[in-house]
Length: 135
Image 1 (cartoon, rainbow, N blue to C red):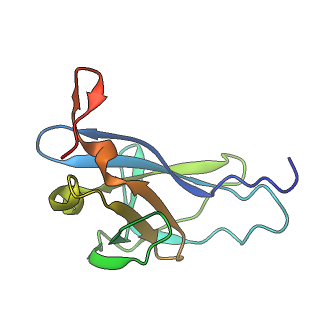
Image 2: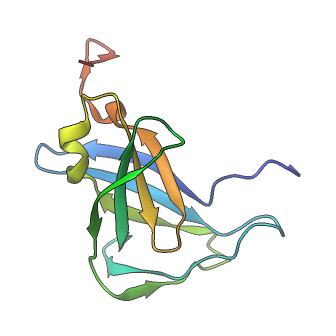
């Protein structure tokens, strides 16, 4: 639909296996002519998903301002998005956000290209009786 763009980089799903907080992001081929070009991402190939090099940030709300709390450099392999495939899954370990989960903050993962995805950190809290636990 003209004028309605889907983010090329967005959080798809997440999980906690009691040792690591993991998230799967989708990085999509651009759908509209005025979208910025697809970036070549670097990281580590392996398994079903690509693990990109990223920067981790926290902020008080969706729009920032953002404070960098760390970076993850997992490798130098290049990922180029296959236009025919439409996109790729990017796996990112989010353990760095654990100390901020109960503080009412937002987190953001930023790719080398500068594209970022923001999310409320309380989405990673365990559910209790069908509702999120917050403090």
